[in-house]
Structure formats: structure tokens, C-alpha cells
Image 1 (cartoon, rainbow, N blue to C red):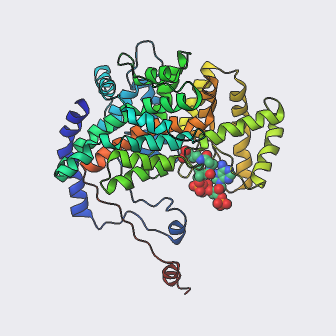
Image 2: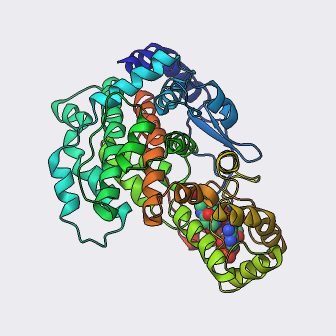
Image 3: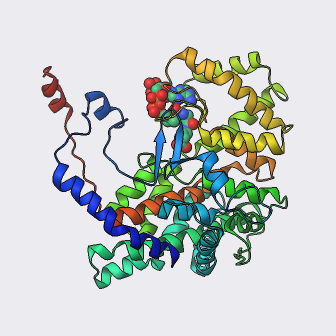
Length: 433
Ligand code: CMX
């Protein structure tokens, strides 16, 4: 398999680099931890390592060192498409180089080969109450797939630590191949006829997803490709990525780890913010009977803040500029549906909200994040059921976190076990106890 061969060729070098760092420089400090960080969600503590993506506070995400515009330009694209193969992005995340079209297609072919979802998974989802949230169904489906894990099987049979990454990679491919089908089934079950989607091996991941979801507009194929690429990875410290890493560090297989990661993504301060953002835009539109004036929106924003709520889609723990993932989606909307009413509301939001948040003086970053606009794009193409949006985020996020899982096993990362202290210990440490 192409990803296996490429990673395998790089491993001796990577293992030597990491061994040298840890063995020869293991006691060199990379930072100090303050009381505020201990009590403040470990914000800014450097305690994780990944070479797959990095979030620069002032420039945003870089996938393997490359900013979003470069990634969208350099990854190979299907004939006549505006957006690249998702398989090409997976190659970039896993291997570190831009693939040729053949290499991207080789990943797409692996997905087609591994896309069959066992029947019991559909049955598990059908058995759930009708009002179950799509994210609950999504995490459950991933767990229901766990019997497919080659990692778990090989571990039970007995394998060496050096081999862990190989069945982890098989699971990464098997899992990501099935997620589009699972997500589309959840969509059909909740909002359409409940039929089981089938992956078409003649179509790429994005086109398959558009077809399985039943969106007629051809442009949605590009939308799906863009969406999955943008949401794939955001270094290791965000809740979904960190959960995957933490659970995986116990050598729980990728299915267990991803299911847990999706539970984290379901939180309103993380992935659920995309659903909340669209609800916010719609409530603005409904209140003002269309696109509000900046003055109307400013008042609405203050009312929201004064009632103790956050403005969804704005702010970020690391970023200090408008999220380039927001910018890429904004540009897509501007190019394809500049007159869409909700897009216009989103534009007024962009003009007004940062000023309000700055004036309030609490949020360290007043700018929009990825979630501020993604729902607007989905809504435009008729995917109007916004409970479903975090599942879309999850399909994309799986690409990054499974890549990280494979590399964490390949580089022998150990079980995670930070140390806790008591409040009394902290008081003693600072001299007030
Ligand atoms: N609206 C109102 N208040 C906000 C805010 C927003 N959009 N963003 C931050 N703040 C507030 C925080 O709630 C915090 O208030 P308290 O001191 O009263 O607790 C204060 O500003 C400082 O927060 P911060 O250091 O700037 O931000 P954090 O790192 O703590 O939190 C985030 C980051 C994203 C959770 C926060 O900005 C937020 O809640 N945003 C809205 C929800 C959202 O869009 N989440 C999606 C993020 C992207 C993703 O992971 O999917």
C-alpha cells in the first residue's frame, strides 16, 4: 500500500531523530508552567509533539508546513474540479510531501476498497431513538465498527512495538474509508428515507459524499472536498485531537480512540460551535427580517454577551487572526453565491463582532474561527439540518487524527500520564499556605 511504503521508508530517519533528542537532550527545558496555566486548561503549555500540522497564532494552520492556499493550489484535483482530492490531502498528512495525481488516486482507491460498512452498524443506528443527536450516532457507529480493528487483533496475537504503526495504518484507512458512508447513512436515517448508501469506486471521496448525501448541485462535490480538507487537522492540543492521542496512548485501537475524539468534538465550545453559529445567524436574520444593519447586529451581540452567552464561531484558544479556514470558506461562498442571504448576514457579523468583542475586552481573539461560516455553506447547498454539521466536521477531523495516531505509534510515543497537584500544594508552592 502506497502510504505504508512511503512511511516505512522514512521511519529509520525519524526514529533516529527522536531517539537522539530524547536520549541526548532529554533534560533541556522547553518552557515553564505557571499556576494560571495549571488552572487554565493548560493553555500554551508545550507538552505535545506532532509534525503533521502546526497552528501559528498569527498565520493559522500549516499542514506539513504548508498554508491553506498553497495546499489547495498544489494538491492534485479531479478533472474539471476546483478543489483537490481528499485522498491527496491524506497522503500529504501521512507522508509529508505533495502527492502526484497517481499517488492521490492510489489513496482514493484504498478508500474505495475498504468502504463496505458491516450491516450490524446500520442496525445499531436504526435501533436508536429517532431524536438521538447525529453526533451520538456517529460516535456509536465508530464504536460499532471496532470489531474491524486490525490493530486490536494483532495486539492480541502479540506484535512488537516497532510493528504497531502498520495495523494502525490499516485501521486508519479502513476507518476513514467507512466514515463517509456512515455519516451519509446517519443523514438519510435522520432526515431522508433511511436507505443504506453505497460507495461508488468510480468517484473520489468528495464526489461520493455529495452523491451519498443526495445533494444535486455538482458544486457541492467541491464544497465537500474543501470542507474535509479544511477540518482535517489543527495540531494536537484541541479537544478532539488530544482525546484521540490520549486514548490511543493507552494502545486503545483507532476505532476506540476516534469514537472518544468524536465525543469531544460534540461539545459546544469545540465542533458543535458550527451548528450553534448557523443557529445564531438565523436568529439574527429572523429577528431583523433579513440582513441586519451593523447597528442592529451590534445591539444583538451585546444582548447575547450580557445574557452570559458566547458568540459562537468567534474566538480561539491559539489563533490571534481571522482563521484561514474561515477565509477559505468565505472566498468559496463569495465566488459561488455572493447574494445568499445568510452569507450576507455572515459578512455583517465579520464587520461587527470583532469590534464588539474587542470592546468587551475578554476574548483574546475577537476574530472568526472555522465554525463561523461553515454552516452557511452547507445550508446554501440544501444541507439545512444543522444538527448534522458536527458529523461533517468529524469526517474531516478523522483524517488528521488518524494520521497522528499512526505516527504516534510509529515513533513509539508512550502512554500519557501528566501529574496532578492539589490546590494546597499550589498555595504552598507560591507561599500563601
Ligand atoms: N464570545 C464571548 N466570549 C468569549 C468568546 C466569544 N466568542 N470567546 C472568548 N470569550 C471569553 C471566554 O468565554 C472567556 O471568558 P471568561 O473569562 O469569563 O471565562 C474569555 O473570553 C477569555 O477566553 P479566551 O482565552 O479568549 O478563549 P479560550 O481559549 O478560553 O476559549 C473558545 C476559546 C474557542 C472556547 C472561545 O473563544 C469560545 O467559547 N468561542 C465561541 C465558541 C466557538 O466558536 N468554538 C469553536 C472553536 C473552534 C473549534 O474548536 O471548533
